[in-house]
Length: 402
Ligand SMILES: Nc1nc2c(ncn2[C@@H]2O[C@H](COP(=O)(O)OP(=O)(O)O)[C@@H](O)[C@H]2O)c(=O)[nH]1
Ligand SMILES: Nc1ncnc2c1ncn2[C@@H]1O[C@H](COP(=O)(O)OP(=O)(O)O)[C@@H](O)[C@H]1O
Image (tube, helix red, strand yellow):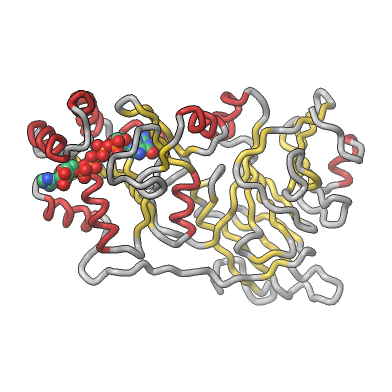
């Protein structure tokens, strides 16, 4: 249990009106959800450089320091907070640019419920809001030796500015030509297990006797660079990603026959006989699951490499002449410390004309949340910011900035 902050719990919401309090000591806001009051701001119990979170449990009168997952936002000299759908809080930092001012604190999403089971205590998780859209990540699965790596390399070679590879973590030993940080992050099992517990992984699975996993960071760095992320993961991992907040396209690569698969695996000559046998045993199960589960959006048979690659490009809409990513960076906007927020359906109105010398009609922004994707502990994407003049516009998406 944490120490009570320096104000009385009874008057908590009176002192910190739901949503906005920009001038109190420590710049705290309070949001009430059921029997809990989430106090955001002030010192974090681990670092004074980031925004802290404490929970006041009204029924017991106790303060709780929750486990805080995800990247925490740096302290600012004022923020506003709005409750969304009862399970996450949008925090808008004042005095920041629009590429770093929107943050989501998840408090009751399915991800949080899962994490609370693992941690055995209250969990909250930050996720940074990112303006604009990147195309859906691509999950590629299929048995060992089917040609996943070969197809992905072709894609990355032909479209280097469009695609980025999600570098997984694994406890298996590196092969001769594999580089740490490029092909995989080669990890100790104990380290990887601890990081899984800390919520750093989007998914993980035990494959052929080793642990493999996709860290949240691995996917986010690719999207932050404006590229479309490719994940090469097994069928269990694909199933976990389907259940996660990552909205992806799922493609299963199948061999023309089991004999051909065995031939390719042996010809690759990267595994011992024992490992080949294990991979072939697992391949049978993977082929069954891949074909029958309804998990995959597309199944491609990798018989002739060239035609399989053409089919993959067709699925991804890569027709002749498409060679570069169309990156659109949203125009940056400065959000002042003093601003007022209100919520209408999936739109947040941000009135920055609240300063002494400004008119209410100056700098009114609308943050559209209707296309949100992703979430804690990574990034929340698909935010759209519009500038609007309340005297002439209705809140309808005119004057889009992103
Ligand atoms: N679930 C999951 N599977 C992964 C991940 N990275 C790789 N894999 C899968 O692990 C299996 C073994 O990969 P690897 O040891 O590189 O052997 P290869 O597929 O024969 O080249 C393959 O099915 C990969 O798709 C990951 O991050 N998560
Ligand atoms: N269509 C194909 N026909 C023949 N050999 C192939 C084909 N696709 C891939 N290969 C070869 O099969 C082996 C396994 O491919 P790889 O991409 O490493 O598979 P995976 O990543 O699925 O384990 C490699 O030696 C590769 O060159």
